[in-house]
Image (cartoon, rainbow, N blue to C red; front, side, top):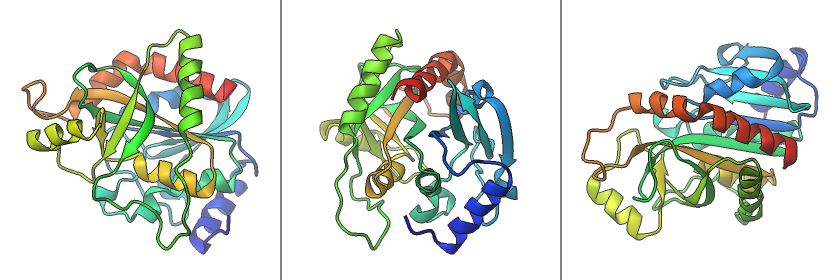
Length: 263
């Protein structure tokens, strides 16, 4: 991958801090899931604000730290906090972790997020391995770009197998991307269910699309933190994210660890 000037400055800075030229795994931690960073051994922690030309995470539940270390004997670079399009960042910035994964020749990229459940068979606290993505009316790809295929289905199958073998209950389904920052209306949720969405969120799809474009092996996991608008009959609140993450943080950390070990 040809590095832009801004990406080159980021990479050179990280190399000078002691991160090796090749990293086995990159993990992007979504809202409320930053506790996974506590499971990383022999850590080197770098605040986003110290990295040249690096955006900062401003959403609650995103600490804004880059954590390097080891998990299951593999080198890992974890983004504790991500950048959203609704924060004012162009998609070229929101996919920066994918570009860094590519630049460090990562063998695997694990993306996580907090999401609202559209599928009424799901419940708060479920972990869902993303089979496919839905992006109605949204272009989230880097432009211009040659044509490419979304090629992550086989990896999703392997991750589900890893979860089963590890005794971790997971759902599987389709993630629908919306730009946010507002929660969806009840009418939108009914429409999204009709077109096959199981959960809805405001991230992840751009990263998965960019990973396909760059040929980075990627998988994604959603944590259901609330039932989407109109399903449970209660007002949606971002504080639910932390509560749901607390319930499944150990399972999430164990699943990501096994993905790093086995995938």
